[in-house]
Length: 461
Image (cartoon, rainbow, N blue to C red; front, side, top):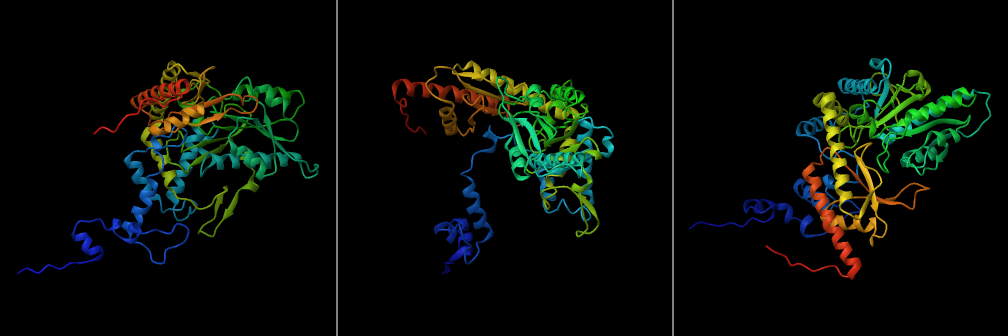
């Protein structure tokens, strides 16, 4: 007669085909969240606990609020996994990863029309925010040089539109620079007249935005530069420009070739862009490039040797993985100029198509149409009995994240919704969004007029 033996614990469960991570203490008891457990969990159980919690996050592909890349191909995923353990700052130990960073800087310098691009001055960062900080520090140090050692101690200022990304206000607060926020309106961006009116001898620079996060618009960099040229020619201060091209730096060169915004303008001292936005890399990489070495004061660059071999570094961060830099170079090789051009053209085409379809729904009025970066803003028409905040909340029931917010000071009475179109937004997916917006606005209209949610529906198998 056969003997049957019962085995308890994970081995016995495994023989029964039961997944042990659902039967161990991590699954049938409470896992402490704010302290270490006395005994660790097995890898399967620990993975399952974290994996299940992350199910509560939104779907990144449906997050129309973010400019950040949410999809890369399998080869890029594999390459990033291979480079995750490499510390980018350790250029002596990982010289080829450092070489890829150098090549990316030169590619961008050439793309942005810097002279002598083969010896470009720039670096990678953890994102466009750090790149902005470094660009601002270079402007501040250059201004102090111009002031000279005998100059009176005064507080410098930075001129920018009130529509700038919050990183510039952070920069000013962290480094004790006066933020001169130029009111916008009726235009949604900084104007040449507004920039000039706020400049004086203590202005370290003017920030021009190539792709506003509010409505996607390009600021008129060339017109601002011409106005500053006239100011200097008339005996006024000689104020440089930093172009915050977090999104537009990877768009304008490919689909707006006639737009003059970059180092073709002599007054542009530095440009930043985000590799993890329309550079098409997962979060964690930005870029800043200076016109030439003279625009980056040497005293900001540190030389360290304790990782083995002297190396220059200019960053707010230190250690970080080489994955994103490798992925950026991969994209440059994989797509080339024509590939980036095709991706950006498709994004803009889809943005314009989607903007038109939303406008045709009836309740909405376009504030922008996706003619700058592939993003656009829209608001409710006068008399619509619900708000942009109602729409934003309602679309979440279908998984879409569409932010609702007020425009900058002087235009704050305008509340808008904004949609960012990335390269993973197909026309078919965009059509699904339009249909969801149609159903949601009909339901909101019915609720507003009748005070009812509408007919309830049962669950159908």
